[in-house]
Image (tube, rainbow, N blue to C red; front, side, top):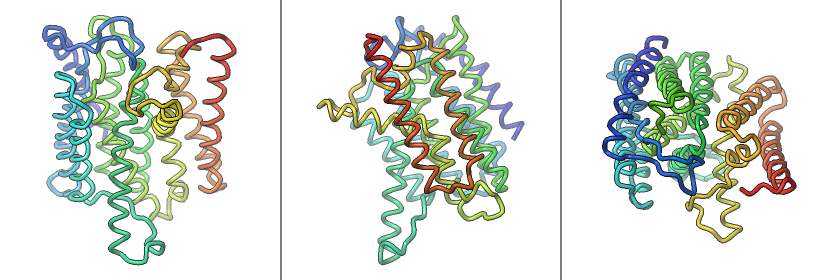
Length: 347
């Protein structure tokens, strides 16, 4: 685990300056617009080095040759990498990007057989249950891929959420003796910490994830989620396994709540769910704090508090903890909107 973390960290840390220089030479910038909150163009190929760190660490340290699942994870990542890279360079139309995402999901879920397992008692037959499992799993992966893209609007947020999630899932996998998945988690964490430095603190080599990075992170978090639900629910020796659904939701509450909230808000205002705007929660927090670092730190702090709260209150069970998480999220959303409205701040 430590070796994978260090290797991925070093690949990303020492690779980003070169990528940043290439992006500037080729004029591959993320220009200020409706989705980002920056005043100047910033290079957007940071995800390439995150991808490189994860792939190399996974191949070297996870026993890839013995795992069919890991081969399909890598295959799905490759599809998303090239889809995201093309989008970062020439800007793909949405349906072409969605086609690449769907292909990666099909590779993972159908060929890699990484999917959730719903209770078949409700579906009448195993065949129908299997079909539902596949459909729901693909929806989950697609949702997380796009949700990470949605929250990548202020410095450090997507990377910070990824760091918290990879640390949480990595620790979880260690507790249930899933070493290969723990290695991937900590490899992702290493790459994201290196990227976080350049994205948040570096002036000379400041860089964005781009779609390459956000889609790769979202895809891996979806894999971690599905495997945690599958493996955690079947392990009665670990107390947190009994609250696998609520703990997973707490870990991923920032991207999951934001994507459903923003789609709902856009639809009730008659807008396309996929048209970018500044109505995300992170934009609202940024309006209040006035600083990318403060906004990111506050959101990540709440994320950590909710994870710890679920662990400490695990005796309440999923039937109480999941509504609790949703109630807290909705309450925070309303409080932000109320504060902005009553302080004459425009989102």
